[in-house]
Length: 485
Image (cartoon, rainbow, N blue to C red; front, side):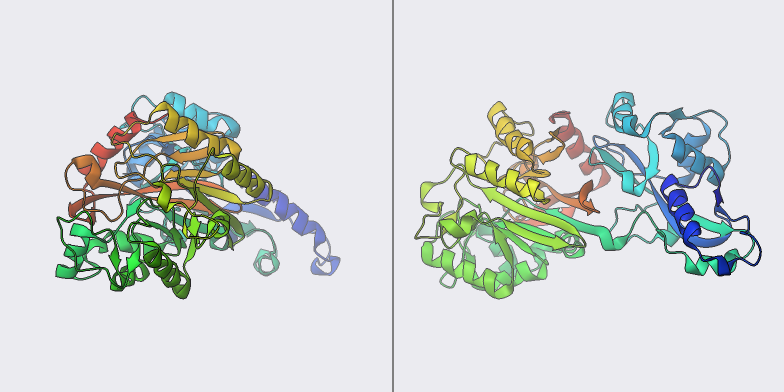
């Protein structure tokens, strides 16, 4: 069993093992000369490739024509296996591209990139992506998209079986058919603070419950697991909203329909306003969540419930959510006999819990309802506390307090976003408080593969719309410049 040098090694190994197990009765006299070839023969597999650059890259896409020009001019950084595939796919380039070992690819790209606006590009197999890389869309499509169609994507490579009897033998192929198996993908969207009170609620009353989320809602509806941190309790006695009354710290019960419409699956309960309308309202809120089948973490009916992590399995990916509130106020913290958020204390309990979950094979998403800091950068204490969760084994650390978006970091093989920005809030008093991220984490085959950033701008007291390219560039420039790279 032979193969073109461009065929992915994992597929070659599987094919050789498969051929060795075929019964002798299949062959008439002797085993025919079968080979695996790129874009030839009887199709048995498709291999999906992604265009990527360091995560701190502002451009979001590239045309296929521009990408092929970069290839021909020798401007890509590649591993040898991908170079062989592209040579078979596009022909030899006019200038040699930079070839590095696969293990050195990410570091080489970061070292080569001079600024956020000029990507140091690579092409690599989808299953070899990293959270430290940003995927660029090619003519508007990328394999991280939830509606990805490999047949319509220009970097899908088909591998076929060629040789005598290949048309018959291809039907018995039982090896891998793709390196992007949708049955192994889990997408999780993480968001920032939410509340349906004051001017947000006023807009909902005037224009309809879904008005504030008409553009952000579909982003959450599209993923497998959508997260929200609603900081205000629902209450049956919550009055009609007054846009100027900061004492009105509750959500009207009928506003829960917006949560369901947005497709929220996981509700974080670390918010520091959850007990502001009283414990009866907080218990009523928990009742709503339970009746709707929402999964919760970071708070509960009592301290024991608040301490329980949320664990789940989806498409073979084992994911756990943990979160706590280090800032109070004290009356919002759960006690053995009353509901509330989980206090962080000295962090020893949540660190031990993360270690235990990590050792048990969970991909841990850890959140903190941290002290609010209205700047893109982070102070030394916030950096220390967030990175302590990463060191304990969290795969993702996300700042759910972030009314002002903050920067990123990679520490201890963890992806850290110190502050995501508001999902539902009426803070229109500065540009940064109007800026927001929705972070979509793509888990694949038991590991975090990539992170995609949706960026929104609050244009009417809680109504997020997708940013224009210019607005997005300004936000990414500010946040990347303030990040720990």
